[in-house]
Image (cartoon, rainbow, N blue to C red; front, side, top):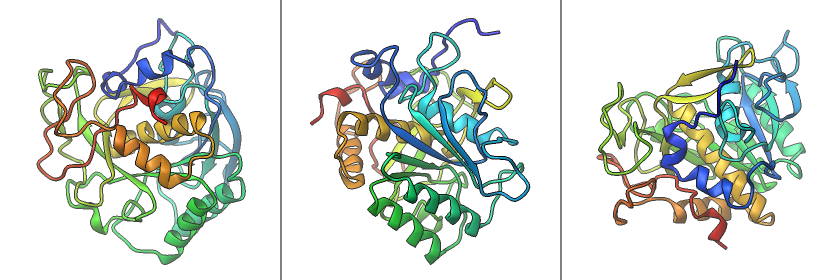
Length: 307
């Protein structure tokens, strides 16, 4: 049973609801988003699953037998339909690219297959979300991502949940992706006045989040209400949950600027983000307590005004 549309505080913190309500309310964002993950629940009413494929042996295309991919998908693109949740790029076409199994793990070779599939469909896919990583190095994985970016797809990657510098974490440390750290936000507003969370005070870098100079952007990643498998909903935390905020923003920007390259999308999102210099506006636009870096905090409240 769905009672009403419930926006997580994270969405108001990044100005998302105001941005989509100006030109796009009750419409679908004209963009394609690849969720390279555990799959997406194809029957979830909040999600516009456009294509589905699996590279995991013994599984059917699009079958999310873990829940992670469906959660990521909802943050990026849940429909604006008055119930459940609404994503950053509401109703965008979702490509379910299953490369992780029911335990949420997968081989680098399988992940590369999924990335190559996105590259082959780059004309229809604007942004891709990678909410996974390892403290490892793979030149083949980097090459696959670089080829996909060169084909025009913006890649967004979770920074990792080990509370350490992410410089040794792949694929977040690939210089051609947007890497995303997580903040704790409890009230959807800047200023640090909300109640503490289990992962730190309001408006602080989440205690689990990786950090460092290679982080591109921060986004909300604590207690985010989103879609889940079996047509359900769940509240989750992690940099895996922060990343799709940025993926949805990339798709939203691309829908308004169809010829933008991945580098231009990255530059636009960084330039629009909240930094330490702006004074808190009492709403979502304002920075957070970040002792480990100075990356901007995602803010899309003015995305329709950026050329």
